[in-house]
Image (cartoon, rainbow, N blue to C red; front, side, top):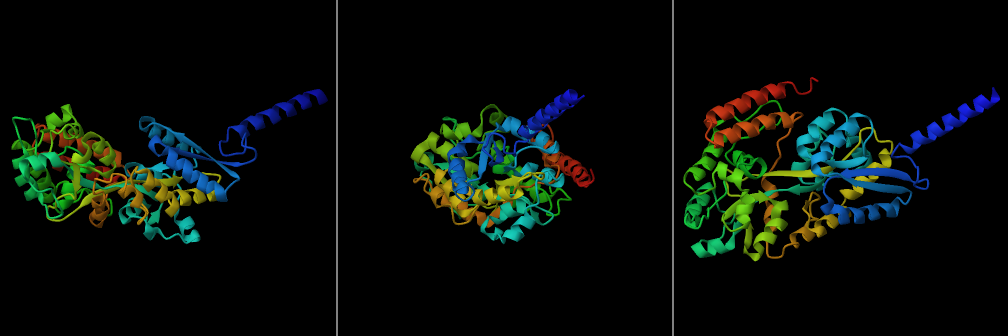
Length: 420
């Protein structure tokens, strides 16, 4: 009997040890240190993140930070599955389209109590990102970096046509007038890229026209307004006149490739595209603010650091997030040239990353920033949006019909939010 009890005790001991080793955030093989697991998808920030973690470890020598980079195609599936199963990383990247779903399901922690307790001044972060990562007036993600949209242009093509470079006085009319002069059908050069794209294309135009994608209270769609229709009509008009590649051409060859090969004179794109475009065009590349419609506007998106709603190491994780999104951490990010840091005033390193390019344009445009449109079920209504808009650009249906369909279906989706 005693022998059987001894065997059972041994088995139970071994079983408990195995479970402890599977905990991820327990000591295990880390010499008694607390382990924080961090997840993101872009290895281009690896060196920056390593330096920032070293900064964190100066005041937290008893914490080991393990970083996992998961490719974008698998990142969200893996993250959602692990968090829904009460496991997953302690700290991770969060983006706008997924934010509301994660916040409303309790998969990420409400940071507001920690912010209040730490007396953290969130006004140091770009307003559009604070807005984007707030849920029920509480901040759930501490902003890290952002993307704004600007008008890239090919200086060589402008010089050849004898046209002054774009500046902050340009409007939709200026674009159309000069696109006509820059277009050279014999050489296959287009004056402008009227993009069949949301963030760098029609989202900006919708707000410039005085419209909106989703209401501030996240309860209604703005797609069926005259202002939204005018934005799409303007883009379609440029295609019809041959001043921009058609929707079909854009599907066959990406506009970025056409611009990079000297076949498009003006190309609206996000700030994070600057290094790639510079590699393609070198000092022929210029950038200006997006031209105004009824008003100036640029869609701003960016990433934040979020915390697992079930983390066992809240204090250590919160301290890490504060370093990652703190002034020194953001300066390290800026110096890498990766993207515009979300912490105001730390962007100097990024501004100098491409000396021949006036990157200040993107920072200045934040005065007209509009947060990327999101709600709890962003993915659902964006699926409807992308299909209908593509069909309209391809001539399968009128824009009036497509936009009404988007608005009707989007309003039905929004009406179900918060009820599951």
